[in-house]
Length: 205
Image (cartoon, rainbow, N blue to C red; front, side, top):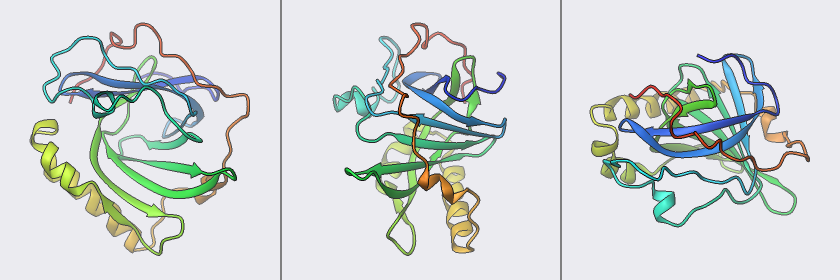
């Protein structure tokens, strides 16, 4: 466990797939109180893919699609210690209009010396800013890729999605909605990945 990250410092989000790094994205710490870690990915932030590995489920889909960097206004992420989902916020257009709340099912964050490790679970819950309620996303993709990517874990991932939906149905909004009005420091530019990002020790699930 590392100490808290300072606002403005670089935080590397790595995804660990079946015991090896799969992708990494350098982000910027917005807030870290030891429980809630908020990070921001500026537009233009590079995607890092390991040069070597066994890749038991294949290369990361973004790499296969030719993705090299984040596009658009950037992405804000809220991560809670021990919680198997994060909350993404997106903006779009010339006026930087808030798009909605994206509950991204993923491994609870495991802190490292350079940031934190996680693994996206494919299944998501999306609540658009102009919608009355939420919808599930990527259900078919999860059912197709899940057996290889998350062996033995699919029931728990489905249960987490159901738990999120039940809380939303009950009107239990566990995040601060004022994050929708947040704007990044204008001096924040994309960060570079450290050269040793693939070799920093990690805990595999």
